Image (cartoon, rainbow, N blue to C red):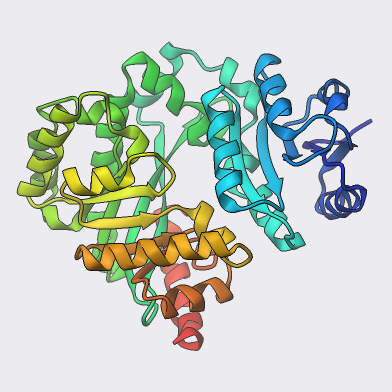
Length: 395
């Protein structure tokens, strides 16, 4: 009997499979493995919640496997690994997502046990089982929003120069009465396809403002609150006025709010999006281009939209330690942001080596597990005390 959670390993490197299996089993995961893409069907019989796939295999390569996963409507999540460049990994990730396969992350070979575990121990993978997606109805989500079941976790953002705490990103969760704490991949897609994304976003904004203003004094927090914007927010011409009213209601300043926009979230009507984002900036709000470099129009968006921050995607930050192309992308992004007068934030900072490298490269801000995982606001005071001690050794 395979214990849960089950992770499937598909890699024609037998030694790598054995290494990953040993690491995962020691951490309490069950594993099944195969060394040929033609054995995919056998792996799927075990109903794995996660599949770790090497895209460079003989006989059947990983791109063919992804195509079969899509055809089989694989309900788990995929981790893509390879010794190829980060650009190749990113292409495979995009291809999987375009076919409806959910990607948990990518890893560049060679990687260490801690790199693998850091990805698999992310809260999103620990708390939400893919099959739950089929158990949540539209009425259930609407009820959850109306009954104030949404909760926020906050991930700190700090300055690389001295480790000073300068901001938090608010990340939504759902405290479901039957299923427990759910992470965004369990309900965001449903919200975005059902017309509930905007009510959900407004609820998140109000909750974040209230919590941060209520705790700002006790935490001594005067930094920026970052909130993600869904595509629908950039189609609603009343959105800038509505969010300004919410800010005024709690006595916050607009310049303390950073709205994060991924380039893939910009809707098909760029004129309306430009109208809304420009008015947000005119009212004092800050704008961040999130996941920079992962789409096809990053530079066009930088030119057309009034961003104040450039957020380098964690895919490149994580890979920069071992991949020269990723290092060049990160360094170029930092230089571009600085030349445009933007703040530059690197997400996915997961170890001290990455911290020091980014600081030496001229990056201004950092976010990632090395600093802190997302947490309820009541845990922020304890984190702050711990971080104040730890950051002294980093400067």
